[in-house]
Structures are given as C-alpha cells and as structure tokens.
Length: 146
Image 1 (cartoon, helix red, strand yellow):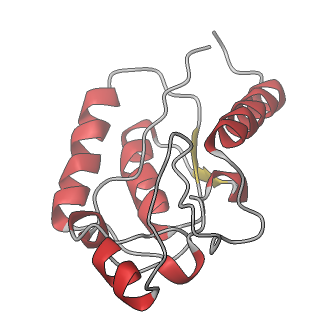
Image 2: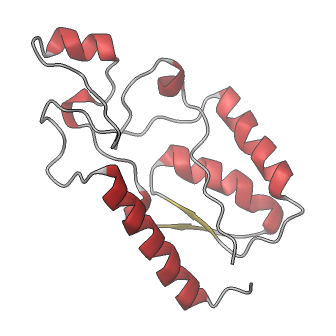
C-alpha cells in the first residue's frame, strides 16, 4: 500500500502568515488552483480513499482531489491541525503586540513555547505516530489493495 500525504492548499491566512489552527479559513483562489493541480497529477493514479480533517480548507482540498476518482471524502477529527488557542487568526507581530514579553519560538516539534496552546495539544512526533496509527486502522478496515 502506498500512502500519499498532502497538506491543505493555500488560504489567505497562509499568505498573510496568520496562525490558523482550529479556526477555519477558506482556500484562496490560488489554493483552489493548487488543489486542482494536485487532482490532475493524481488523476491517473489509483486512489482507494481520500481522508481529511473536518476543517473546510482541508475538506475542500480533499474533495477537489477525490473528484476525478469519484470518491467521497472521509473525515477524521484526528487529522485536524494543531490548535493555537488565542493566537489563532493573528500574525506573529499581532501575537507579540497582544502578548508582550512572550517569545514566539517554534522549535523542532513546531509548537509555540508560550504555554497558550490548547490543553490537548501534543508534540509533533506524537502526532505523526497518531496519524500512522489512523492510516493503519483505515487500511485494515478497508482492506486496500496493494
């Protein structure tokens, strides 16, 4: 079995360098074009299933990619992005202005160091293990062809 991982396409907040987290921001026109390009690239490849987080930007990207294969997008809460709590919707400059004295450091795990993350946030490596467990479970349920 081959697993392809694609991140959602561009949103205006990506371009503006805003923390998105669990807030929903729709795909930009460029983002829809990116998703359509990915769909064209994958149209000739066998695809057994398309999974997405429940966030609109991820669902829309997945739906565009799934369309040529006539597949429904399956959602899993486990695939949603990490939460940034009070930082969501803000740029780095806005975070620094709103939370003076707090240093924005995003280290190797990709997590801010100011302690304002949602309580259920986990380091990036743990997230990777969780995602692979989800894929393995889905593959076992679906009995995907190799």
